[in-house]
Image (cartoon, rainbow, N blue to C red):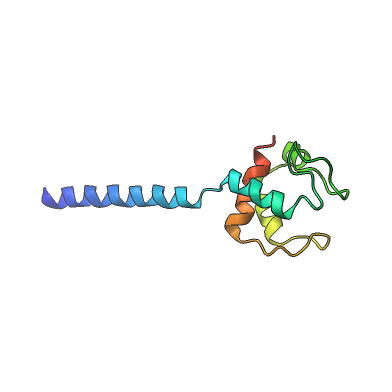
Length: 106
């Protein structure tokens, strides 16, 4: 009986720890907006209150509206940008935050 209680307690601890780890790793769209305003407004229209973009780079809202939009793909893309993008050297969480922000623009 005591062993079963110990096992149940251990299972609850593991489940709680996995939820805590998941929430720590969850993307933060608000932080993504802050990063996008800092890094991306030079080329992209990133928010409705922005007057205009300076290049032909697609607005973030149009990226979010694409039928094949997937935040995971955007995160991957941002971590390995194409040649026209500046080398921002975004970390995984920063790229995920920006992708989460773009997803809010659907």
